[in-house]
Structure formats: C-alpha cells, structure tokens
Length: 428
Ligand code: CMC
Image 1: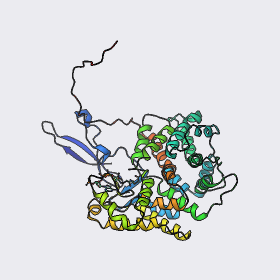
Image 2: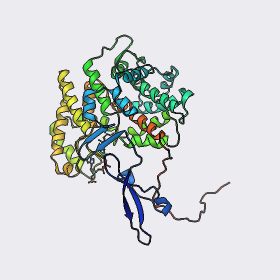
Image 3: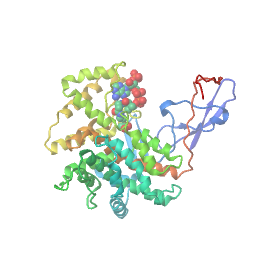
Image 4: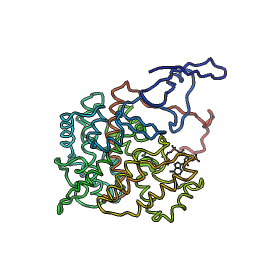
C-alpha cells in the first residue's frame, strides 16, 4: 500500500518523488525501482536496508524478538504444533483442517523413497566428505532423476517438486550420515512421523532395529519447527535469486544448501558446539570473551549475534527450554550446557555485547540438544538444511506466483577506467 512520498533532493537535479510502501507489519519501504531510469543506483552491501521482495510468509521484529509464520508466533507453533503442520502453514498460508492435514501427511510420507540409482551416486563421494558437501551434490542431482515434471511455469509441476523435496530430504540427509559411517542405507518407513522416520533412518541397522524414543522424536520435531523458515536470510535469498532465472527447483535448493553451509549462517551450529568444546570449562570463558572482542582476532562468539535480532532470538528461548527439558528427561548431564549458560550470562552483562545488541541466536543451544540425541556435529547443518527446505520451497513458490523478474543487482564500479590494451605475451 502506498501511503506517503519520499523526496530525494540531489544536487543539480530536480527533486525525485518516490513512493513509500507500507506492509501489514514492519518498517515502511521506499520504492526505488524506477531510480535507474534517472541514472541512479542505490548502494547497500549485504542488503542491510534493502527489501528484495514482498512476502506473506514470515515476519520478524528484530528489536522486540518476534518471529511469526503466517502470523502465528514461533513459540506457539513449537509448543502446540508439529513440523508437518508448520510445513502446511508455511506452504499454504493457513492452519490445516484435520482432513487437509491427513491428505498432506500421507502425500509427504508416500514420497520418502528416492530413485534407487541415487544410492550409486553416493558412492562417487569420499567417505570422509563433509555431509553438507554430499547433501549439496545429491540434492542438485535430483533434477536429473525427476525430470518428468520440471516445467517451473506449470503450477502442478511446482507442487510435485515441492512434495518431492519435502519428502525426500530426510532420506537423503540420513543417507549422508550412513555413507560417512560405511553402513548400509536404511529405507524410510511410512508408518513413522517425519522426525521419527529421520531418526530411524539415521540409527537403525539391518542387524538392530532402532526403537524410537518419543522424547527424542519430539525434540527433533521441535528443532525442525524452529528452523523451518526465517524470511529473507542468505540461503532463502539465494534460492530466490537462483529461482528468478527460471532454474529448476532442485538446483535452487542445492544453491540454498551451499549458502547455508557458511559459518556465519547455518554452519554456526556446528561451529558453536566446537567452540563450547574448546572452551570446555567455565574458567576458560573470560579468555574467549576477550578474544571475541579483539578486533585483531577473527574469533567470534558462535551462536551469538544476528543481522535482524537486536534482542533475544525467540527461537533460542525455545531451544534453551528444550535443552533443559531433554537433558532432564534423559537424566543426562552435559558440562557444555553449564559452559553455554555461563557464557550467555557473562556475554549478556558485558558492555561490548550490550552496546552491539548481541544475543544468543538459534544456533547457540541446538548443538547441545543434537549432541544429547547422539547426532554427530557434522550433521547439524544438514539437519538445518532438511528443516529449512520447506521455507525455501515456500519462498520459491511464492516468487513463482508473482510477476517474476530476474534478480540482477547493480554495482558501484571502482575499477580501472577505459584504457589501452597492450599484450605482454609472445603469441605464436
Ligand atoms: N562475536 C563477537 N562480535 C560480534 C559477533 C559475535 N558473534 N557478532 C557480531 N559482532 C560484532 C561485530 O564485530 C561488529 O562489531 P563492530 O561494530 O565493532 O565492528 C558488530 O558486532 C556488528 O556485527 P556485524 O558483523 O556487522 O553484523 P552482521 O549483521 O553483518 O552479522 C552475524 C550477523 C550473524 C553474521 C554475526 O553476528 C556473526 O558472525 N555471528 C556469529 C555466527 C552465528 O552465530 N551465525 C548464526 C546466525 S543465526 C542462524 C542463521 O542465520 O543461520
């Protein structure tokens, strides 16, 4: 909705009137899309102040620590919903009726198997590859197996691709783990829940069937909910950018996985657990805090800080609760939780972190939970990717339902001006 105008006064030019758009919630945005016709671009590295699209899926208020999916607060979804219901909400915009949910669940669970030939693809990877490298490769390769419905201009094809991705991600993720161990792949079981099936494929072997612990199943389901979507983050923007050229959905999701892997994004959960292990004792915390504040040291407190949240990440609040609950229920004690709690306490009372509004994010406690579930740290980001796939698909579908424009940022060129070329090479 246009509700006011902004006036740009540039020396030597007539004032330029720009529309100011308002959404249902959040900051107003100045519509600058016609500025290029006036011979001007805007400059915003890292998209600090730039809205790249309009969206109805997720809303974040970073100052107040609010996260809503289709209007529903994340803590309520984590408490009263399950991952597949959240997937439905993200994809279709409304909470499903029982009947709609049953149809959705059956469709997802009936497509969990992957083409048998994909198992051979895995064997081309080294056993010691990072599972994210494998995940990225095999997800992109799905395009080669499911090309029967890859016309992105046909809505039904987009729907089929969406279901295939959502259904098959846990199977691929568990296969990455099994491959790294040298164990046989475990086929999905359709009578299990989404989270339960994933745990089953991770931990079952032909000689010993894994009995699903409902406490772990619920904790995994919550972790999936908390990672399901997060509006225009780096990986989602990557998926949108890749998709804007009309690229096929499997390739777009593979691009999202690649972007997620970085330690500033989804790779932080693995890096955070490694950091907590390195700190190992509360007595070492001051030394690490000192390093995090030192501009000459590249070390950062992993699981801390966020581009949007300038308050406690609401996902971290739920994550911390799950962490306590899980360790209590399993009657486990983890020294790393003690280190994490003390680290959080010290950082939140330190002027450096207070001034910069750096709070724990979703990755701060998730590693301790996953570790308690017996999941190795190299799989943490894979689980993040599996959970985030629905968010990526929801954004990809939303983009296709609108008038699509290829993403093509501009630049501020700071290289050479035109100059004369003279070769230094002796050409034959
Ligand atoms: N430890 C120490 N200092 C930090 C940290 C941190 N974790 N995060 C930010 N800062 C400082 C930074 O040095 C800068 O200080 P100064 O103003 O003196 O130069 C200031 O805070 C602002 O940081 P920034 O890098 O400009 O902020 P950003 O919005 O570009 O980066 C971030 C956000 C998440 C990449 C960053 O906070 C970070 O690297 N955190 C650690 C990695 C992490 O936990 N990532 C997971 C993010 S949540 C899950 C997800 O998105 O996947």
